[in-house]
Image (cartoon, rainbow, N blue to C red; front, side, top):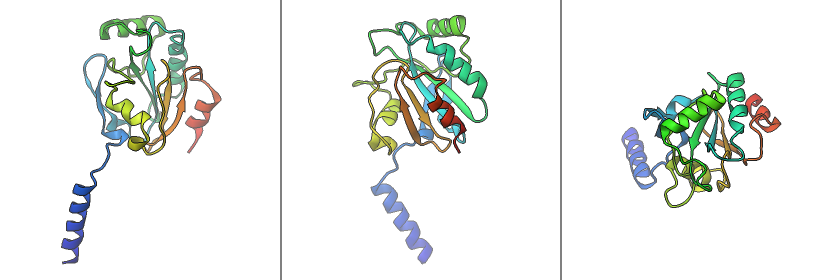
Length: 179
């Protein structure tokens, strides 16, 4: 009887208070159109960055790739989300974006399909990143291209780094070395 009561309370609670999607609940498409499941990131630290090919911060691709080559793998991943929200600085198709990133910067970290990172058509991943009601930590606005979000190995938002902050900064190094 006690087990039945606990089960009933659990079902009512879940129905009345549905769980908010967590970081690991998202599935997105890569530039190549393949599904990328965030559940595969469990146990890894993650940097999510909105990118653009025609921006003053575009050379950060070089530093992002250096960071990924040095720390990427089992414990850390960078995920790039091309976005055309700021002065149309990412006008390209998926193929053009891949070609640009590979040819100019040798990008090997995962690059997702082009999305919107703000406005009425903001992608659900960026809704989670920017809304405290969804991420449980903080509200933020995506102010420009190459803004970075740091997620810990438990899927918790830890830090927002604005565009001018270099991916190789001490802040990132401290994040990567923290337990």
